[in-house]
Amino acid sequence: MTGLAARRFRTDAILGGASQPIPALVVSRTEGMDQKMEQLVSVVGALLILGAYTVHQFGLMDRTHAAYIWMNFVGALVLTVIAWRAQLWGFVLLEGAWAAVSIAPLIRRPRA
Image (cartoon, rainbow, N blue to C red; front, side):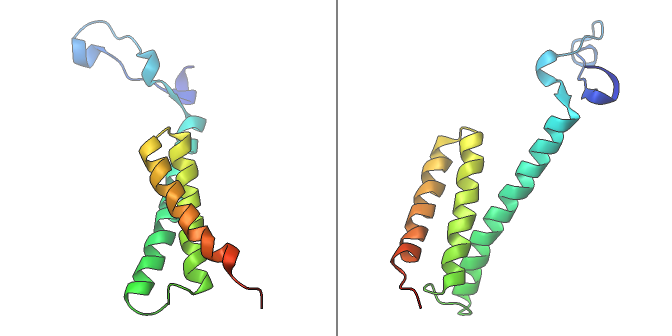
């Protein structure tokens, strides 16, 4: 890939030699957009969990409130998927366990 389709990092500034592209650092625009979208989605997931925690800490929502439970579950599920895609197994374990614990009250919840 050349031109606008890729960003090339060159070795000449670092090594003082002839300008050569480093293949491992060539990133296409679509890959960059995917990374930005993934970052945005992960921030939304984190904000859901932090938002639930914050409103609970300020006494604005009880931990048994459906919105609190859903915010925790969806946030943790999103972060689990992001961690899985990045092969960050410690975070997969952490967020997967958070999602599993969060879904339990939703399963047990009696229908009105």
